[in-house]
Length: 260
Picture 1 (tube, rainbow, N blue to C red):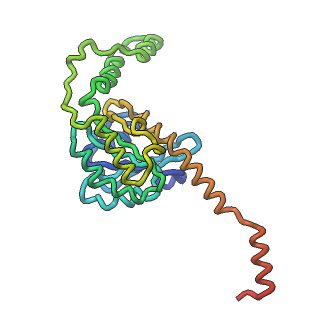
Picture 2 (cartoon, one colour; picture 1 turned 90 degrees about the horizontal axis):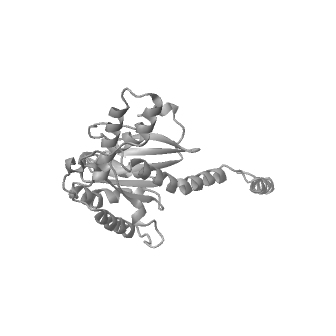
Picture 3 (cartoon, helix red, strand yellow; picture 1 turned 90 degrees about the vertical axis):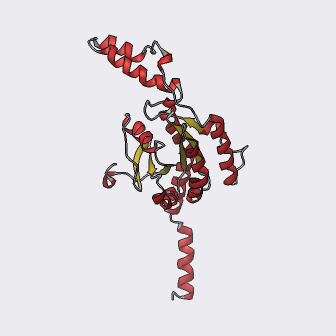
């Protein structure tokens, strides 16, 4: 976790919500530190600060354990985007989003953006698993090669020869299931589905272990929250501007009628 005393003030907040063991913390580590880490369950909450162009975005990781459930609404307060995370191999983790976590987002901004993210895709999706396999093979092939040959192999890794060796776990949550829940979220929030961001854009499947789709998910959200950042900055600028004409009128009234 970064040193709070040295951080700049964030322009906007993004929050990850979801049941324990769906991989919220691992997703953050994969994106921020470019590596996969086996983590223990988050206690309370933690956050990273991401510089996105000239802006600073705080990304909050929240605990999925039942005993920390009440803290979720506090972390969601003023959030511009909420990442509702589930495990594609665990149907209950999707159901928990609607039953336990959706109500916590009532403290987010009224125009908050919602994304549904199914993690652990490497367990069910051969394409997601290939990303890691190719990285491992590229590292093996670059041993003992000169720099030029190494760069070429690293840029164009050869897929594994035996896709049949991929061992998958039964996928319990389909992309269509997630899209259906996204529609219910919009209705719960009283948002018009026609004018809202489409489910195809806001439902992702990722793998924190291999990095599959992780960058695309976060960076899509960051681009989408830019209007919220600009709106907030404009409001801050207006609130800090002194209207000299109003000040003169107030001073004039005080001089005529006294100040008491």
